[in-house]
Length: 499
Ligand code: NAD
Ligand code: MN
Image (tube, rainbow, N blue to C red; front, side, top):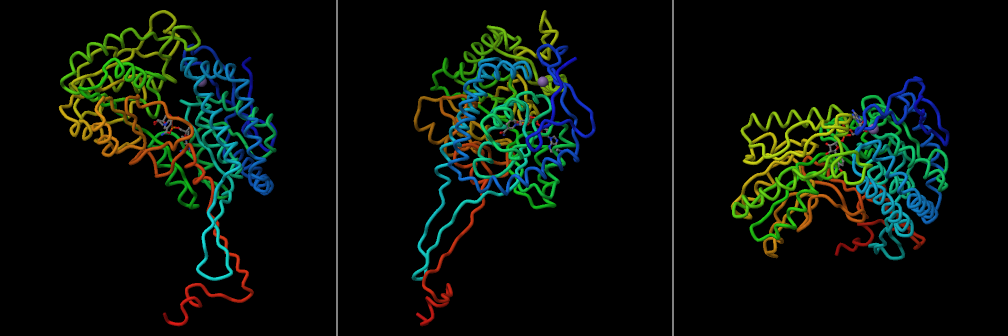
């Protein structure tokens, strides 16, 4: 019998009211069941929100430096459990061990950043226009935060939301993706061990349509931080509008890497392999388009196809595996259907293009790393997010043309250019429409202390990460203190003489 896990509400592990469960499986060995998790509904969400609301009234009064001390402890505990969590995470979602270690490390970095923010949370003091009067603006917590996350970074993305949320004095209802519930359990266990009081963080498992929607629609949830697909992001904005929630959306991407004719080609090659096929292409920041200068097109393609063919698919826990499986059968079908679309559109399949099923691979959702070239900007494989190991290659003849191609998308998350010309680099930084631009770095590799997010349909203008996310999790309160002992009317008494 597989292990049975529970929701976490008001400091207690409890079953869903429905009594129903769903399975979590290993995408590299689909017959391996990792655990059973509660299939919750709106009634469980209501309990969690009630607990979070009650806890908020106490948690908001805990001094921020003391909240920061708890976050430091969380960071320390994550350091201790890093290897164990990374192994569990690879089993539950498939990416290779070096990457799941990085995923935990991002959580550690985010915890330590939040710990130090406990002694900042800076506001402003400004002069008043009236004598004997003091003016300042301070940050206050917002209330109950719903945190809804995808499966591709099962530790990092939840921590990007939860840690700044609670450091700022909010309380949380957390709904992880159904493909990666186990990592969420470990995260919550660690937060409890570090002394986070009951009710401050609540965890509810279940489907997006039932649990996610119930969080977004609940009148007593003040804000929602959502990371996931653009389609669901739009739905959440609609659902949240009836209660005018503050909503932060981090959504899809169609990220590109440009390689100019003056680039270090070996460096650019290492970059594109990592950007396109790291995490099996299942990153919001994955490189899904490569824009190659015509002067280096043929030699670069030869090198790229050769190296891609040598990438080793396999169980991420095994030494030597470089590319893990797709997250589930549905995702692999989507990848395969885009390969069919690419062929029909007239792009040229240079390698991959099939389900990988040799030997042990037959037990998981593996797909061959795939490259199309001769891709035109109008093709669907150049425009739509695939979220798998498929790279579309386009040709360019100038920097301006390359940037135009790169910008020709509804998304605007990450971008990259390889060049040795500093003038090219700065023009690209100025002209590329994206939330992140890398020079001589692939499109992946964000660091926890910088703002993270995208322009256009990648989001709605908020940022996770760094100092920026604290703007989302706090409200400004402006405070005026008059010590003149008389009524002073702003805009009136100081201009009364008519001057
Ligand atoms: P998804 O949108 O299907 O699901 C994300 C989360 O939303 C899950 O927890 C899901 O259960 C929940 N959900 C689904 N329907 C909902 C609804 N109606 N109301 C509320 N919640 C609902 O995305 P996914 O398949 O888990 O992840 C892949 C997508 O996430 C890709 O599009 C990828 O680009 C995006 N992503 C973006 C970022 C970023 O920071 N920009 C990071 C990682 C992933
Ligand atoms: Mn799983």
